[in-house]
Length: 410
Image 1 (tube, one colour):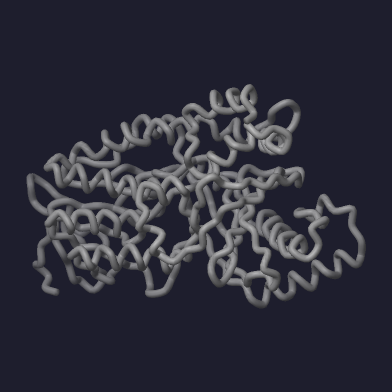
Image 2: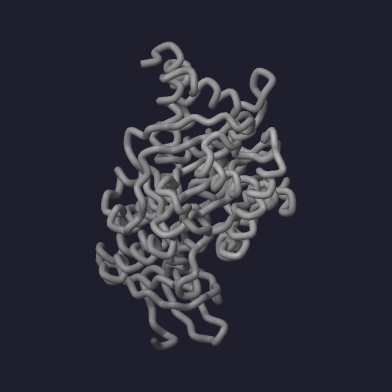
């Protein structure tokens, strides 16, 4: 490919947002270059959960060979468990498989996928195109530049400014073997003494364990120890359903400690670690942050489009890609930002406002403790929590939905 090759749109980042946008644009006749700088076979650090809301919007995602989930076990910080039977399943994917599936669809649609890491070499001025370049000097030009390269996007920092640590979350974890038993449930556990939650997401051939928490209060040593406690508890419960999830809540015995040590030793010999950052924008940032113009756009995590409460971002990556493609194909690329605000901006802004209360105290205990206690006792609250997990219940009317659920339990 020559130095002077020119495209209509340059998309940097071939994750869900970049590939989905490239596919939609290419199907509309746009000449698109999609730059995939990630090493072959290297997955993004992510639980890989895709909500039922996303599967309803784009049913073809089920072709990506994931694992569908119809029941979730949810734990409070105190270790209380509630089982949620979902009305509509969500799916858990290996990010290698999911991203490859979306990238292949972009190629089939006619997008040019270029396996190179690039940076912006020249900014669009007075109608002149953008230029992106590899370290080796190879370059491409395009009239619109799209950053879809994640929360650490250098392009997003250049165009919209850097986000402070207080508006970033950290997700890290381990890929581990499936239990020998057939019972490998999907688990979400709110952290005792910390903001955030741990997860166990079984995939087709392994389990993704992880923790998501705020970056400004991040303490790797303490949180890594807590994650190992969670992982060991997960395997112990498969063998003894009466065992506690968190060892600090165990009545304890030397035999139990010995068993935990055996599990930990086996896990440490087999796990694969990963880590990533996730945006969690403050309300003020939602009001002021730019995510596009007539010559550039930020998609997905690069734009800050992730749920500040849960960290979930795949739905917003795909939807922002779809909205950008629609705006561009209509000849109104500059409308992309307003389309996002009108479509899901209010929901994410509300989640940002609620985050402190969600992980704060209510009636003398963590709200997440109270929420799960109430869900165990009340079918209506349990139904609303199921819808929240599935992505069908938003934050804008969550308070009203919980109140209505309490009044109408069936």
